[in-house]
Image (tube, rainbow, N blue to C red; front, side, top):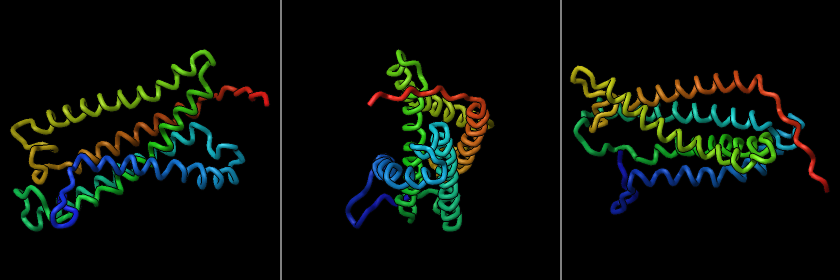
Length: 211
């Protein structure tokens, strides 16, 4: 994709992760100042949502983030095929079209990760609160390892019999969109399992703090 912003400035692809951070910075106050008060009117809960509901909303948003990424890649590949751009390093399509998916990922993080921290803090035994809160960061580490394993597995399976595979060096000849659809399906399955577990969870009563 076209990485230029203006005639002379070129944006590194890796720097797009900045929009994930900016999205978190945007959504955190929006959640506290707008979403929670509105949700409180309907649910009657002080925090607007329960911690499990908040995490569930984040998981749903992450599914839409993968769908958005998949749709963008389909559009990009259509441009490549229509104009025979297979061997071009950059096609005339701005890299900033990827910003919405990063924006959704940041929104999902606000709901999911902060929900995890609140859940572990409220529901863990008092003596294990610090340790349990750290488990939310462990999920990030595990996700990084699993993502590497998934990419390796997909590459190995899709390159059998001499095929280019879904994620070749030249993405114009690959099917990165298939990989995003796979991530969307896995995210949906993860959400279904989460719903099943959350349905049977019984909240621990949180003792009120003395004034």
